[in-house]
Image 1 (cartoon, rainbow, N blue to C red):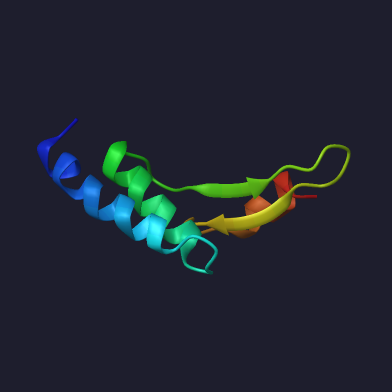
Image 2 (cartoon, rainbow, N blue to C red):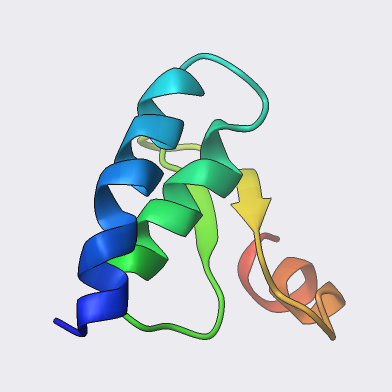
Length: 73
């Protein structure tokens, strides 16, 4: 783990916990995950057995329409 990520993790964890049950939780959870591991973008989808997935959050910077056209039909 890179030292900058390690130093950012406690703050990001506290922010995510503070945001529980609020509209900002998904973006703060994404920030926490970025403090742990490198990734370009995130998609958070809720799963319901036998039903369509529920879109909750994404950090896709461009061509977001592909997410809905290809995966969330």
